[in-house]
Length: 195
Image 1 (cartoon, rainbow, N blue to C red):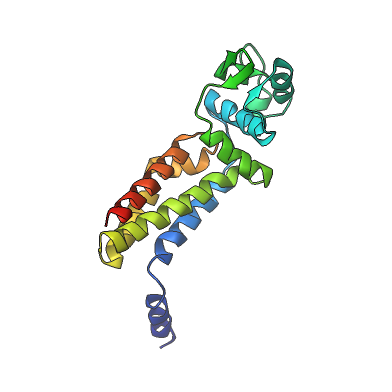
Image 2 (cartoon, helix red, strand yellow):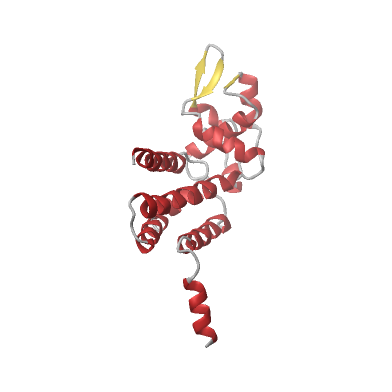
């Protein structure tokens, strides 16, 4: 009898809680893994985040040198030595201009990371983005496409268990996930506005 009442109670919960619970579990696993910065781009976004957090889009050589003293959060990578692997390596990811040194990539991801960095939540940026995009996908399928809740849950779960999505949860200093989320949310809002 108690099990039956519990099953009824679970059925009365909003279906959107299913993908959100699965996403919360995936985020917990991603955050529990030891942090690694796998590619040189990770370093660039890390140092770019610090520059943007200081309000610097263009830096002098001295300011760029100050950033190179900040240790990388990946302990294994921070202890690496050798040409192109020690502090200051982020300089290779920039462009010299008449006013100084600037990043070669679009500033959007640096700016997003800087906001989270200012709050002391660097690694939480992709978790925030993941919840936003899963919520939008569920809403889009359920409200805009007018599909049943089961279809919206399935669409959200398929997004969450996608290996690229799961990998991106872990790779906070890479811009790919950030840009995917903004494109998906923008596309959903575009179709909602056309309706």
